Length: 305
Image 1 (cartoon, rainbow, N blue to C red):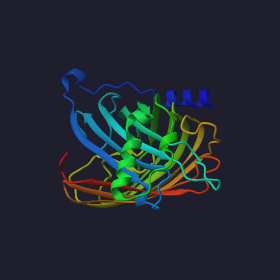
Image 2 (tube, rainbow, N blue to C red):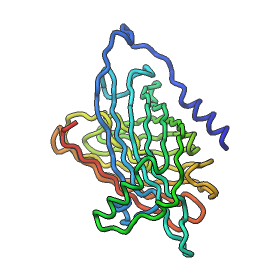
Image 3 (cartoon, rainbow, N blue to C red):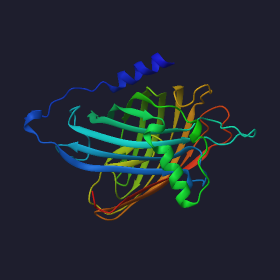
Image 4 (cartoon, helix red, strand yellow):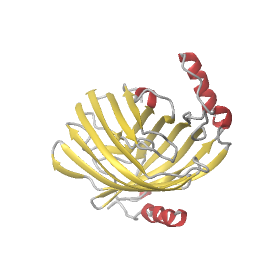
């Protein structure tokens, strides 16, 4: 499945060239338009510590301006993203680890643009994996400070490596009502893992309909990267299904197709205070994972940056 899915990812990722009428790129000045961040952990979900154990994503959005939708130019709105993730094993009945431990740090760049009524995100990241990321040591110290049991598998984790990973997504925002937006989407990934994903999200409430929506790679939770100063709340809900090819994080294990279902509440009580909490159900990812898991996601912003 590696070659067909990689080709599809590249095909979706090809941006459409466009120029802003009356302006050239040299005549505009890019600036920081917003920040997106989200933290996920199974301790604030189902209360366990395994599999998709914890993650954090932080994005800076750069561009000339924002008018409620991505511009047509492929280089007019850029997302620079840093993220981290910990993949941890659970104990099998015979006392073994059901998957290898892995700590990941990733740096990526993604262009956001409109293709007629379609919104697209195209780009990729470099993923660093292994003990040199320092994440296993960080988790061990955190568990010790909080009085939790030591994380499993850190002494048998996957070794250091670098992976190039391409990601593309196209969404079709539909606005049947002033308080409701539907966002069906198609996404493809190739590199460290190969996935073809189909899903949809809805946004219902008084905020977020003119925001730039980003997607958490782990949970699929949509969160805002560019936000209006309006106050209020919005409920998000969605689900997706992914066909999975190869994964470098599951050596020697049979991958399963993945399903995610999620819901969350965004609350903006003041222009510079933005809060979010959500829950995501993740299906089993490999043969031998004995059950699904639930992750909690959190976002707290108080106008600092």
